[in-house]
Image (tube, rainbow, N blue to C red; front, side, top):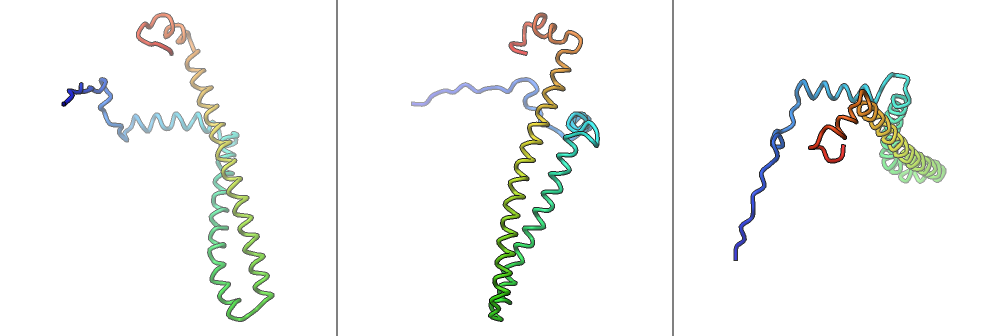
Length: 146
């Protein structure tokens, strides 16, 4: 038994693919103005902090990657004090990496909440400017829940 399935047609304009054009660039820059209102704003400072933490995290990861080759020298020379020092350094770098990773995630989440708050407040300002909400709620029948 075969079933005949109805073919859904895309909504008008739904088939158009997004393009990287001038309109995209203008909209992207408008959003950047909302996300980063000034260089000294909280969002900008959080973003710069996140960038510095991410770079420091990569530096620590690089240093952790160098430790195994240093163990070959210490173990080859049978240097117990060097082994203890190198193990202590490895443990400290791993602890530092885990702390940086946690701070990175915390800062990332803080920035996400801050950006979302700023975008929501911006959209609310646009919505309540000059009776737009009245026009959408009362005069437009085709919009269900603006």
